[in-house]
Image 1 (cartoon, rainbow, N blue to C red):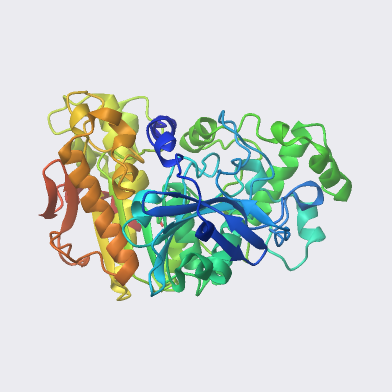
Image 2 (image 1 turned 180 degrees about the horizontal axis):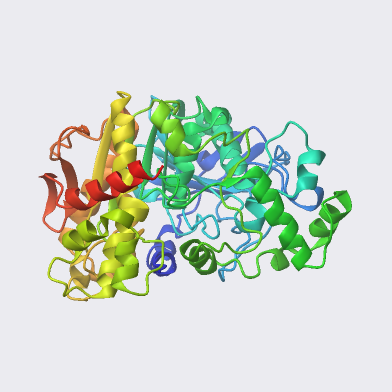
Length: 524
C-alpha cells in the first residue's frame, strides 16, 4: 500500500514556479563562462544567473547504452545554456530523451571575491522517474551559494546488469549507471565549478527520497570519496538505512533479472548478441511498464517490476549495504543533516489490521497498543503511520544514531509544516512525502500559488536558511534562527518544523520508533 505524491509535487512545481524561474532578462556579456568543453551563455534573472542544459558526459546512445558515462564532447563558439535539457527516459509525460546527461548551475550574479559553497541536488523518484526542471535553484543561490542539479539515467536504462555487460567491460562498475552518472556530475563539479564562482572544496550533496538514498550511496561508495564535504538526506529511501525495508539487489540477481526481462521481449541468451539486440530496441520500449507507480507497487508487494533492479551491490560503486557500512563506520565522515516528514511515504501491504500489526511478528500486541490503543483508528490511517515509520521515519533516526556514534556532526529533523491554505483539507494532516522541498528550496508558492501566506514564506525562509548555512559552514545554526541541537542518540530530542515554527524537544513518535528499532535489531 502506498500513495505516490511525487506526481502531485511535480505538477505544482512545474505550473507554479517554472514560468517565473524561466523568465530571464537579456543576458549581458558577463553571463558567458568557459568550462572544459567550451563557452556557455547563461541568463540572468534578478540577482541570480543560471546556466542550464550543460552536457557533463557524452550521450549514452548506441554502444554507450548501459555503459559508464564517457567525457562530453567539446563545442565551438558560445553554446546557449538558457534552457533545461530533456529529462532522462521515463514514463512521465514531459520532454525526454536518452540523450539526457546534462546539468544546471545557478550562481549569484554579483560575483563574490571569495569562492562560494556549492549545493549539488539529486532528485528523487524511486530511481524510476524525476527531472531537474521542477527544482529551480534561484532562491537558494540568492542566499550566497552555487546550486547544481543533474539528470541521471533511471529505470531499466539506469540500473540494469545483463551478464554480457560484465564480460564487455571487465573491471568496470556494472549495473548502477544512474549512480555512475551522478558520480560523473560530481567529478564535473570538481573540475569546472570555479568558472561559476564555486569552491570545489566546499560541496554539499543533498537529495530527497531516492535522491536522499543516492546521497547515502555516495557516502558509502569508495568511488565518491573526496567529492563532497557535507551531506543532507531528506527522507532517504531506495536504499534506506535499514537493509530489509527496501533490499538492494545482488549483482547475480540483477543479471538474472536482466536475462528474464530480455526473454520477455523475445531476446534469448546472455551473450553479446542478446546485448546487441537489447541495444537495438528503441528507448521507449525499455520504459514500458516501469512507471514510478508501478515500481513502488512492486516494492510494496515484494514482486519487483521485471528488469528493474534498482540499487545494485556491484562490488565497485556499491560494495555493501548502507546499514552494514554505517554500522562499521566505513562511510564518509562528514557533517550530515537527515530527517523525514510526519506524513511520509510508506511501502508495504496490509489488507486488515491483523495483517498490519503482523508486520511486527512477536511484537504485534505491543504495536497494536501503540498505534491503535482504543481500536477505533481506521485501517488507512494506521497504514499511513505504520508503513511510514517502517520505511522512512525510523530508518532516518537509525541513520542519525549511527553517524552520531562515529562522532560526525549530525542534525536530525522532522518536517510537519502544512501551507495555511491547505490546513482545512483532511488530506493534509501533515507534510506528505516530498512536500518539504518547496520550503527547503525557499519556493513556498509552488504548492499554493497566489494563496501563499506570510507564514508560508517565513517557514521557507527559515528552513532554507538552515540548509544554506549548513552548506556554508557545516553547521545549520547561525543568525537569529532557533538553535538546532546536534543529534545525541542518548537524548530524546528532535527539531520539528511545525505550523508554529521550529520546536525542539522530546520526540512524540519515540515509543513507535523504539518498537521498530527493537524489531529490526532482532531480525537482522
